Amino acid sequence: MKVLIFCATKEDQELYMQYNKGRHELVFDSDDLNENTVHRTKGFAAIVILTRCIIHETMARELENNGVLYILTRSAGFDHMDIIAIKNHHMKAANVSRYSPNAIAEYVCMTSLMAIRRMKRQMEMIQAEDFTLCQIRGRELRKLTIGIIGTGRIGYETLKIFSAFTDQVLVYDVIEREDVKEYGTYVSLDTLYQKSDLIVYHCPLTKDNARMLNDETLSKMKDGVILINPARGGLWDYQTVLKGIESKKIEAVVFDVYENEKDYLRKTKEQLTSRDEVFTQLLKHENVIYTAHSAFYTDIAIQNMIEYTVENLTEFEQKDRCQNEL
Ligand code: NAD
Image (tube, rainbow, N blue to C red; front, top):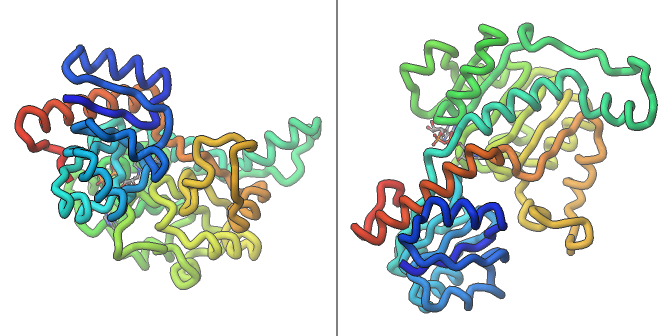
């Protein structure tokens, strides 16, 4: 099958060649798929994209006109794709659902410890040759109640890691799993908000839970709560987060995702064309840690993603359907 792979770095290309083993005709494009690059898809049966490539109705129509049959996202999250529009335009889509959930779980463990040990401040102080203990006294994870929202693949791994630090892990999910109960206690969302010192969001962004962190839900949380979002920017109202940091209702924040991240991701300072004021204000705070949607970015996770994307392509080619079809 002839496949156009967007957002392909040199490292990605080597891995694609390794896992493809000559099965598909792969063409690499280092650009994102967008209104300026969509014309390049003409003549390709399949395309591979990342989360910063948005498939809306107009894009789906253009892809269909160009003869594209399959759209594969090399990610677990697929809220950047309008699946109904894709189906209406007679195309099929798939994601990579199985790649290393540990990459994100370990990121959450690392950044949770960084937040409670005020690591951003400590690093800035050392850079400035300030070797005092001024305002860096930390807290211990074993004394905190952890709340995890979403106990799917990633939430479960995070739960297992945290349960090595503390036996006070509360969890909430719309569907409860038996194996989760070995490590955490299912409670209502309100109870999780009220009792947790540190809350991690591990659920997907859906129409029903957009901005589930807002003024109202923050008011239910403990004063000095620590919040971590490695899932999707749309789950949080970041204006609420900024107000919470300024008022000290929130002690610390870690986020790997942001609603307007498309304007920033994978760009250098010189390439930025616009700036989001709330984002700029947030980054100024020493108790706010932001990473540029990199929680997934480990050697194992990237290998998994590319290997399973190639498997998805092969399945579509052979059966016109795929286990990971969306
Ligand atoms: P998953 O499908 O295995 O698990 C998601 C869980 O959330 C499920 O158990 C589901 O029942 C639950 N859920 C759905 N709606 C909910 C709600 N409103 N409240 C509580 N729970 C809800 O997904 P996963 O692999 O664990 O990934 C979770 C999310 O993490 C993805 O959807 C994606 O947005 C995000 N993600 C981020 C990165 C990153 O690099 N930052 C990488 C991978 C995934």
